[in-house]
Length: 287
Picture (cartoon, rainbow, N blue to C red):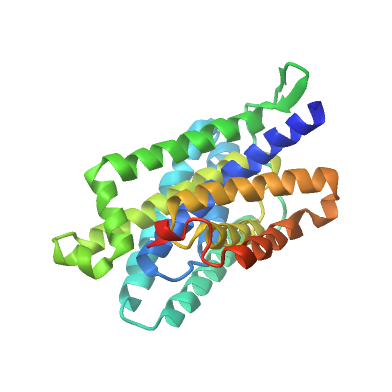
């Protein structure tokens, strides 16, 4: 039972990080209606921004996270204004190629500035916390608390505020939202800013236990794509539930099967669920 509960906590850790990244990705999908491959680079940029602020500038962990969130939000908005907005009437394939271009540009920029080496981000939460018979690093508990706290705040923002309602309306029907007076450009910039900030904070939460390197966003964004397909393209609840499913599947699969197959489990689970429910778990939410 102790080992089982330990894997539950590990699953919550992974699920929290994956949900944050997938939430930003699914919000942007609602605006572009194409997958944004650059989102993994935004995740990486958040980690490097915090690494610079914490390890090089001497700021504390929370200021580093705030700085990373702002930096990645700005990068994300600039990407929307300079790249995606001019392509709004172009075929969707152009958006996909452009997002890959942003990904390569940001990774090359990070490598030029910090090199290709792996870096370790400092964190003040190095203690081991004992919960009854369980032991867990404090950083993992921080990930669980902060990630799900951010998920709740985002849900409240989308459901309880007028601005959040405009984002949902824009995701459901861009032309219809414009006809009722919603400023499509402002909502698109705000959505990209929120998505970038979520990716940046997710990276800062997870980087102290996973190192910082230029390709760190590849596997995370691949699993985020799995999550949004699994949960239903464009569905916010689907991104949350899908993140938890993948997180738990990886944690339990790595422990009870083998760590060698940990990253394959997510894709096997995707095939299994989509064979039963091709539209995803929350297809109605996507529409």
